[in-house]
Amino acid sequence: MELPDSFTNVRPAFFTKKKPSPPQSGVTHPDTSLLRPQLAMEYEWLEKVTVTDGPVDVTWSAHHASQKRGKPFEVSITSLLPLLRDQAHSVATVKHVMDKIKEIVAFLNPGQVPVIAADQPIYAVAKQVQWHWPEIYGEDKFVIMFGGLHIEMAALKSIGTLLQDSGWTGALVEAGIASPGTADSFLTVSSITRTQQMHQITGCSLYKLLKAAHMDYSKETDEQPEEVPSFEAWCEHRKRQSPQFHFWYMVLSMELVILLLIRSFREANFFLYCQSLAELIPYFFANNNVNYARWLPIYYRDMVTLEQKHPQLAQEFQSGNFVVHKSSRQFSAMAIDQAHEQANAVIKADGGAIGVTEDPSALRRWMIAGPEVSHLVAQYEAACGTKEGTEHTSHHEETERAQRVFFENVKSSHKP
Image (cartoon, rainbow, N blue to C red; front, top):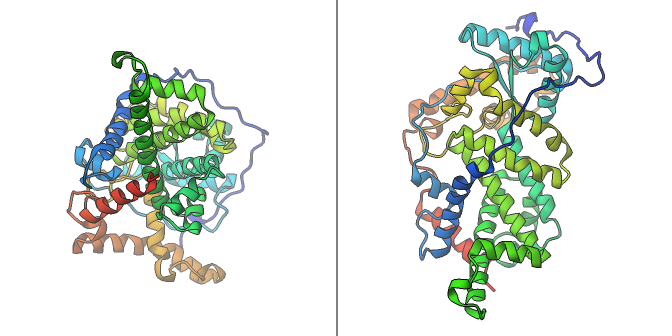
């Protein structure tokens, strides 16, 4: 079986202008006060871990899943198209893929503006394609989304750069939470799930130490009880006094912003998503993450002006349809690119994609059959009640063992 030439043949394309310019559009400065209630929810979780005597919904995911703030949803339908052999981030390939996606969307849902999610290199090329050929691929004809999983990974790597040589990895080793090699891997985000958990443990530990220090100050000060500054005012005062205090307070603040971004995906909360992006962008500038500092502001502009350019899409996104629900579990929605990565993992499992790139005929068969294998596996899991097909609605971290392990790690991390 052969794919049609119209799908596999990528016509050459290149930019005739050196640097296509983005169209002018006004963006209002984000209202930071809107984020305070969301940050308060994170501090509520930190306070819960600080005062609790036992491991009851103390993990970050279990705590928020128990709040059941997410909107009602249906399990998403996902699939893969046949793969292309061409270089993914070339102008020709990106332009060709945009053409094919436009044709598919017009067939499946006539009248819808195509939405494409991509990682940073491909996102950059796709935006330049929009600016170079606005009459065909302009921002009024396509919505290009920055891959949420890749933003999350970049943010975790950015805070890893900040924590380099800070003693953080040594503290994790000394507490018995991780081995030296594993602790170093958290700086480079070798495992995104484990790195997330380590920053959750670190955030809880830092908050406990902050609360204990404020309590000691309240007991030792000569000021009258009514004159003792509040916890927030005391933190601001200490930041000005101590560079070390300022550094670790900044680490805690960045960890909470990253958690807000992840929660925006898990709860399918588009407003929180936009607000957390606005809070995260300055950290990319401060930590010299050039590519994300350059392109995330462009993406943020697209998201906050979506209601003016594409009101119907904006309504869908605000209803939670900017993420993928692969199961009926609470607090388990994921970014589009993460769902795509998981679909890729299915067809790569057990050597599915390994070795075929050296054999053109085998590669061609796998390009066609691989996505269908992924679809059949998903159907099988749904029929058998396994993995994504399960009807369970509780989060997978809402187990006694997960709570106990997390609680013990938090206790170990701040022992004197």
